[in-house]
Image (tube, rainbow, N blue to C red; front, side, top):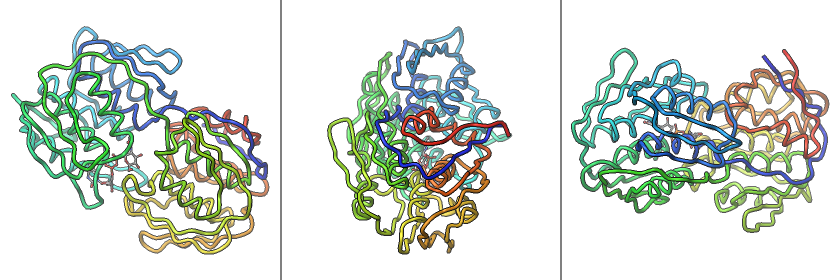
Length: 420
Ligand code: UD1
């Protein structure tokens, strides 16, 4: 297994291009199951999670070709409707093949994804929505077994205890596009990745309105055809790079960056004293003066993203003052607290809150990555720390950040990989 080694203290400077959004690409690839025609998806980042989705599509009978970020999916000899535990258990987003399989083949057998380091992560909302469309569902041997002679559009409320669900909205939308009649999803997720999926489905011939708002309306059609689509830029990768600039007192121009998808993050950072220049397709961030501590609360989009919480905690741990970070999406998503404290941070967890008392400087230490975004938080801490940080279990990072070492190296960071 590899570990990442970072020699901290270098101000990052230069230009970097943001990759296509992992969280857009995964459901979009699943949506290719809705047609037998060829689909071409561009801007697919080379990541462990995208490879897992391609493996799943192959196991479901698709032919998949990959060429420099362009994925072509065509029908294979026979479609399979069983999404195996071995694949689904490694990546939760694979559960969103349920909707398209059921929509197209009228049957699906999809392994339940199970929990992960950031919490139990139920799928009750996915199942509720699919059931309301008229599917027969049962759970047997760890699999959801779904059948429907016909799916019928319905008006449903899909909000849960923690608000809307991104993948449940995706799953239900993908089942509803081929249902009979009209489906209305109330309390739908508004994330840009849901909008991107809807745009792809529309290119395939689906009739969808209201995507990007909490009420999505879908008029079922009989048939979807092939389409080509370019995924939006990854707003979480962009946000992580913005924080890499600020935590190292640097100056970075992000290309292929849609600043409109980063409203809550940019607003908080401006409140903290950071300076941004927004242009169409790019964003310039520079550190000009010491930042102030700010409080953040994670919320569904357009609120502050939970996927930026760990990275923001790293920044606040070296920002003078006290910051209260409240996690409202995954109340147990705090595995990085203990690791940051090993680097000298002063962070105390109180239920769904972390109280961060900013210190002058972190000191490099061996730390362990526990999940994807926690790993990104540790990389940021390592970039700012005095001395050497060694991050183990970096396979988490490889799930979601394309060429992260190369990108950071190009900006001047001293970061490299070593065998453990
Ligand atoms: C997606 C993102 C993930 C991000 C998360 C929240 C992808 C591939 N992943 O995950 O990076 O952290 O959105 O922005 O897009 N919930 C239920 N029942 C359900 C489904 C979810 O209670 O059936 C809860 C979850 O436990 C969580 C909240 O709803 O508390 C939001 O989760 P959800 O939006 O579903 O996350 P994902 O779509 O799995």
